[in-house]
Image (tube, rainbow, N blue to C red):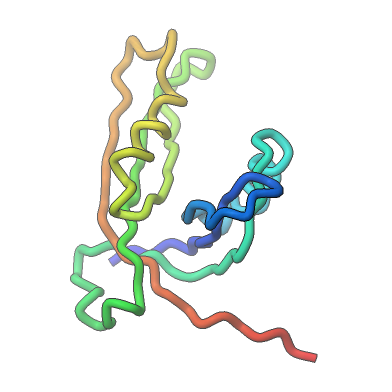
Length: 138
């Protein structure tokens, strides 16, 4: 069973009072992603919480109750770069009930002149383990 360190957060337009949208971002790129969302796209990232994403290969959900995890789909695209003359991997995580819609948006970033070589897409279902918020210490 593989696992990934993932941050679950809420993404919303700056100044918006709305609930926003839940996003799952690999911990290793979270700071860069957060900066990009704020500086280029005008979003604010709130309520970040890191935990583990586990693939469903060994049915890890059997060890947890429904409110202890979120169902999250990992989408990996192997995209050809003509500039580098090789494939590169782009991996994103989406809440299962939004995965199809968000996958289309994600993959649209990788179409264009280089689309002559088909992007390979792989999906794995998994769970993101809900962790209690840590109350700040004095």
